[in-house]
Length: 161
Image (cartoon, rainbow, N blue to C red; front, side, top):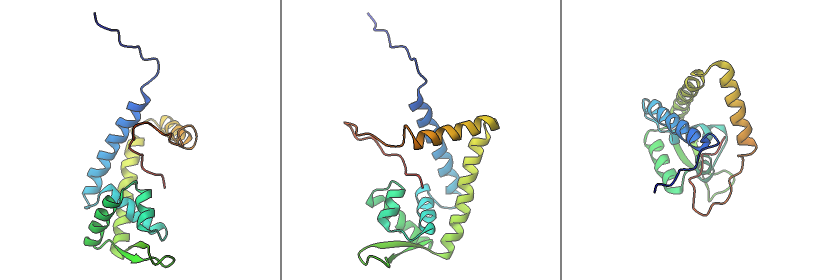
C-alpha cells in the first residue's frame, strides 16, 4: 500500500526564494569573474569604501568566517586592490583600506552588480517588479526580519548593507 503524499495548500515560498537566489548568485559570480572578482571580494571593497571598518566588521557584513575573510583579503592584497592597516581607534584591530586601483575596480563591480539586478527585475513587467521589490522589502523588515533558533544549524543569509 502506498501512502498518499500530503497536498500542498500554499506556494513553496522556500523553493521560490532559494532557487531565484541561487540563480542570481551564479549570474553575479559569472559577471564579476569577468573582471577577476568574486562576490565576496566585491562586498569587502564596497563596504570598506563606505567607512573605516575592521576585518571582523567586514566579515560579519559579508557573512564570512575568519578563514574565508583572510583568503578574500589575501586575494585583494595580491591584486593590489586593498591592504590591511592598523585601526586608528583600536591598535589590536586591523582595518581594510581600499587602494586607488581597488576603488576603480569597486566602481566597475558595482555597475556589474547593478546590471545583474536590473536584468533580473527588468525581466518582469514594471508593475510586477515594483510589487515584488516592495513585498520583499516588507518581508525583510517585517515578518522575516529576524531569524529564529533552529535545532539544526541553518546557513545564514548575507547581511544587508
